[in-house]
Image 1 (cartoon, rainbow, N blue to C red):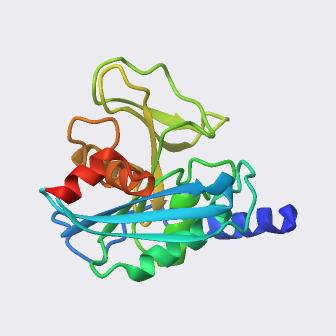
Image 2: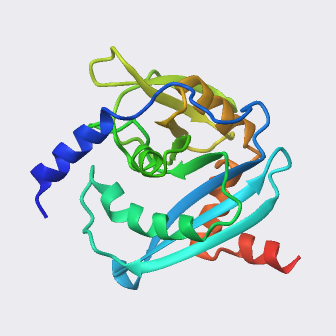
Length: 225
Protein backbone atom coordinates (compact mmCIF):
# COMPACT_ATOMS: atom_id res chain seq x y z
CA UNK A 1 0.00 0.00 0.00
CA UNK A 2 1.48 3.30 -1.09
CA UNK A 3 -0.49 6.34 0.06
CA UNK A 4 1.16 8.62 -2.46
CA UNK A 5 -0.01 6.38 -5.29
CA UNK A 6 -3.51 6.21 -3.80
CA UNK A 7 -3.55 9.98 -3.40
CA UNK A 8 -2.64 10.39 -7.06
CA UNK A 9 -5.35 7.92 -8.01
CA UNK A 10 -7.88 9.98 -6.05
CA UNK A 11 -6.78 13.15 -7.80
CA UNK A 12 -7.06 11.45 -11.19
CA UNK A 13 -10.52 10.10 -10.35
CA UNK A 14 -11.67 13.50 -9.06
CA UNK A 15 -10.97 15.01 -12.49
CA UNK A 16 -13.44 12.53 -14.00
CA UNK A 17 -16.33 13.29 -11.65
CA UNK A 18 -19.31 14.91 -13.37
CA UNK A 19 -20.82 17.55 -11.10
CA UNK A 20 -23.78 18.43 -13.34
CA UNK A 21 -27.05 16.57 -13.86
CA UNK A 22 -26.39 13.78 -16.33
CA UNK A 23 -29.22 11.27 -16.43
CA UNK A 24 -30.30 8.51 -18.79
CA UNK A 25 -33.94 8.76 -17.72
CA UNK A 26 -36.71 11.19 -16.87
CA UNK A 27 -35.37 12.26 -13.51
CA UNK A 28 -38.66 13.90 -12.55
CA UNK A 29 -39.98 10.40 -11.76
CA UNK A 30 -37.24 7.91 -10.94
CA UNK A 31 -38.60 4.42 -10.51
CA UNK A 32 -36.11 3.19 -7.92
CA UNK A 33 -33.79 4.96 -5.48
CA UNK A 34 -31.04 3.02 -3.74
CA UNK A 35 -29.15 3.48 -0.51
CA UNK A 36 -25.85 2.11 0.74
CA UNK A 37 -24.18 1.67 4.09
CA UNK A 38 -21.03 -0.14 5.23
CA UNK A 39 -20.21 -1.61 8.61
CA UNK A 40 -17.53 -3.85 10.05
CA UNK A 41 -17.57 -7.06 12.05
CA UNK A 42 -15.06 -9.02 14.14
CA UNK A 43 -13.12 -5.96 15.16
CA UNK A 44 -12.96 -4.66 11.61
CA UNK A 45 -11.75 -7.90 10.02
CA UNK A 46 -14.97 -8.31 7.99
CA UNK A 47 -16.53 -5.58 5.84
CA UNK A 48 -20.33 -5.77 5.67
CA UNK A 49 -21.90 -3.72 2.86
CA UNK A 50 -25.64 -3.26 2.39
CA UNK A 51 -27.52 -1.90 -0.59
CA UNK A 52 -31.27 -1.35 -0.48
CA UNK A 53 -33.61 -0.42 -3.30
CA UNK A 54 -36.78 1.56 -2.60
CA UNK A 55 -39.60 2.35 -5.00
CA UNK A 56 -40.37 6.01 -5.62
CA UNK A 57 -42.38 8.00 -4.62
CA UNK A 58 -43.73 5.69 -1.89
CA UNK A 59 -40.20 4.79 -0.69
CA UNK A 60 -41.20 1.20 0.01
CA UNK A 61 -38.55 -1.50 0.30
CA UNK A 62 -38.22 -3.47 -2.96
CA UNK A 63 -34.96 -5.34 -2.47
CA UNK A 64 -31.82 -5.51 -0.39
CA UNK A 65 -28.51 -7.32 -0.62
CA UNK A 66 -25.64 -7.75 1.82
CA UNK A 67 -22.05 -8.63 0.95
CA UNK A 68 -19.45 -9.69 3.51
CA UNK A 69 -15.79 -9.82 2.58
CA UNK A 70 -12.48 -9.84 4.39
CA UNK A 71 -11.34 -6.28 5.05
CA UNK A 72 -8.27 -5.63 2.92
CA UNK A 73 -7.58 -1.96 3.65
CA UNK A 74 -6.93 -0.29 7.02
CA UNK A 75 -8.80 2.64 8.48
CA UNK A 76 -7.08 5.78 7.17
CA UNK A 77 -9.05 9.05 7.22
CA UNK A 78 -9.39 10.48 3.72
CA UNK A 79 -8.95 7.07 2.10
CA UNK A 80 -12.06 5.28 3.40
CA UNK A 81 -13.48 4.63 -0.06
CA UNK A 82 -10.66 2.13 -0.71
CA UNK A 83 -11.76 0.30 2.43
CA UNK A 84 -15.47 0.28 1.56
CA UNK A 85 -15.98 0.03 -2.19
CA UNK A 86 -14.96 -3.64 -2.76
CA UNK A 87 -17.82 -4.93 -0.60
CA UNK A 88 -20.25 -2.40 -2.07
CA UNK A 89 -19.41 -3.60 -5.58
CA UNK A 90 -20.12 -7.18 -4.54
CA UNK A 91 -23.48 -6.18 -3.09
CA UNK A 92 -24.28 -4.18 -6.22
CA UNK A 93 -23.65 -7.17 -8.46
CA UNK A 94 -26.36 -9.07 -6.58
CA UNK A 95 -29.04 -6.39 -7.01
CA UNK A 96 -31.78 -7.28 -9.51
CA UNK A 97 -33.66 -3.95 -9.47
CA UNK A 98 -30.94 -1.47 -10.33
CA UNK A 99 -31.83 1.99 -8.97
CA UNK A 100 -31.87 5.16 -11.04
CA UNK A 101 -30.17 7.09 -8.23
CA UNK A 102 -27.99 5.98 -5.34
CA UNK A 103 -27.73 7.76 -1.97
CA UNK A 104 -24.44 6.74 -0.38
CA UNK A 105 -23.64 6.91 3.32
CA UNK A 106 -20.51 9.03 3.18
CA UNK A 107 -18.92 11.95 1.41
CA UNK A 108 -19.17 12.83 -2.26
CA UNK A 109 -16.99 15.69 -3.51
CA UNK A 110 -16.95 17.21 0.00
CA UNK A 111 -13.55 15.62 0.49
CA UNK A 112 -10.04 17.11 0.59
CA UNK A 113 -9.29 15.60 -2.82
CA UNK A 114 -12.87 15.68 -4.13
CA UNK A 115 -13.42 11.91 -4.16
CA UNK A 116 -15.29 10.47 -1.18
CA UNK A 117 -17.00 7.08 -1.34
CA UNK A 118 -20.13 8.46 -3.05
CA UNK A 119 -18.04 9.89 -5.88
CA UNK A 120 -15.69 6.91 -6.04
CA UNK A 121 -18.59 4.43 -6.20
CA UNK A 122 -20.52 6.57 -8.68
CA UNK A 123 -17.52 6.68 -10.99
CA UNK A 124 -16.98 2.91 -10.78
CA UNK A 125 -20.67 2.21 -11.46
CA UNK A 126 -21.09 5.12 -13.88
CA UNK A 127 -24.35 6.17 -12.28
CA UNK A 128 -25.83 9.19 -10.46
CA UNK A 129 -24.86 9.20 -6.79
CA UNK A 130 -25.26 11.56 -3.84
CA UNK A 131 -23.14 11.65 -0.70
CA UNK A 132 -25.12 11.72 2.56
CA UNK A 133 -22.65 11.99 5.43
CA UNK A 134 -23.40 12.16 9.14
CA UNK A 135 -20.25 14.15 9.92
CA UNK A 136 -18.26 16.88 8.25
CA UNK A 137 -14.96 15.77 6.79
CA UNK A 138 -13.90 18.92 5.01
CA UNK A 139 -15.00 22.49 4.42
CA UNK A 140 -16.75 25.26 6.32
CA UNK A 141 -20.21 26.73 6.56
CA UNK A 142 -22.25 29.48 8.17
CA UNK A 143 -24.13 28.80 11.37
CA UNK A 144 -27.15 26.63 10.65
CA UNK A 145 -30.62 27.57 11.89
CA UNK A 146 -32.27 25.16 14.29
CA UNK A 147 -35.43 24.73 12.24
CA UNK A 148 -36.13 21.56 10.24
CA UNK A 149 -34.97 21.67 6.59
CA UNK A 150 -32.70 24.64 7.25
CA UNK A 151 -29.61 24.45 5.07
CA UNK A 152 -26.42 26.33 4.30
CA UNK A 153 -23.77 25.96 1.63
CA UNK A 154 -20.74 23.88 2.53
CA UNK A 155 -17.70 25.69 1.13
CA UNK A 156 -14.10 24.62 0.65
CA UNK A 157 -11.48 25.98 3.03
CA UNK A 158 -10.84 28.98 0.81
CA UNK A 159 -14.59 29.79 0.98
CA UNK A 160 -14.52 30.23 -2.81
CA UNK A 161 -16.09 26.99 -4.04
CA UNK A 162 -19.23 25.21 -2.90
CA UNK A 163 -18.60 21.53 -2.20
CA UNK A 164 -21.98 20.58 -0.74
CA UNK A 165 -24.72 21.47 1.70
CA UNK A 166 -25.30 21.31 5.43
CA UNK A 167 -28.90 20.21 6.05
CA UNK A 168 -30.81 20.04 9.31
CA UNK A 169 -33.14 17.23 8.37
CA UNK A 170 -34.92 17.02 11.73
CA UNK A 171 -35.46 19.21 14.79
CA UNK A 172 -32.92 18.73 17.58
CA UNK A 173 -30.70 16.49 15.44
CA UNK A 174 -27.19 17.03 14.18
CA UNK A 175 -27.10 18.11 10.52
CA UNK A 176 -26.29 16.00 7.49
CA UNK A 177 -23.58 16.87 4.99
CA UNK A 178 -24.88 16.47 1.45
CA UNK A 179 -22.71 16.61 -1.66
CA UNK A 180 -22.57 15.66 -5.30
CA UNK A 181 -21.34 12.14 -5.82
CA UNK A 182 -21.27 11.70 -9.59
CA UNK A 183 -23.52 12.86 -12.44
CA UNK A 184 -25.66 14.95 -10.05
CA UNK A 185 -25.47 18.70 -9.42
CA UNK A 186 -25.28 20.16 -5.92
CA UNK A 187 -28.79 21.60 -6.22
CA UNK A 188 -30.24 18.29 -7.36
CA UNK A 189 -28.41 16.44 -4.59
CA UNK A 190 -30.06 18.61 -1.95
CA UNK A 191 -33.46 18.29 -3.63
CA UNK A 192 -33.46 14.51 -3.66
CA UNK A 193 -32.23 14.08 -0.13
CA UNK A 194 -35.10 16.32 1.03
CA UNK A 195 -37.53 14.39 -1.19
CA UNK A 196 -36.48 11.17 0.56
CA UNK A 197 -36.98 12.42 4.12
CA UNK A 198 -39.91 10.99 6.08
CA UNK A 199 -39.55 12.54 9.51
CA UNK A 200 -36.23 10.96 10.48
CA UNK A 201 -32.72 12.34 10.50
CA UNK A 202 -31.60 10.17 7.59
CA UNK A 203 -33.32 9.99 4.20
CA UNK A 204 -35.12 6.69 3.72
CA UNK A 205 -32.60 5.02 1.37
CA UNK A 206 -29.63 5.40 3.73
CA UNK A 207 -31.82 4.90 6.81
CA UNK A 208 -32.89 1.52 5.45
CA UNK A 209 -29.35 0.67 4.40
CA UNK A 210 -28.06 1.52 7.87
CA UNK A 211 -30.74 -0.69 9.42
CA UNK A 212 -29.91 -3.57 7.06
CA UNK A 213 -26.16 -3.29 7.55
CA UNK A 214 -26.53 -3.26 11.33
CA UNK A 215 -29.49 -5.68 11.52
CA UNK A 216 -31.33 -3.09 13.57
CA UNK A 217 -34.79 -3.81 15.03
CA UNK A 218 -36.33 -1.37 12.54
CA UNK A 219 -35.36 -3.59 9.65
CA UNK A 220 -36.20 -6.85 11.38
CA UNK A 221 -39.70 -5.55 12.13
CA UNK A 222 -40.18 -4.50 8.52
CA UNK A 223 -39.30 -7.98 7.27
CA UNK A 224 -41.72 -9.58 9.70
CA UNK A 225 -44.70 -7.60 8.46
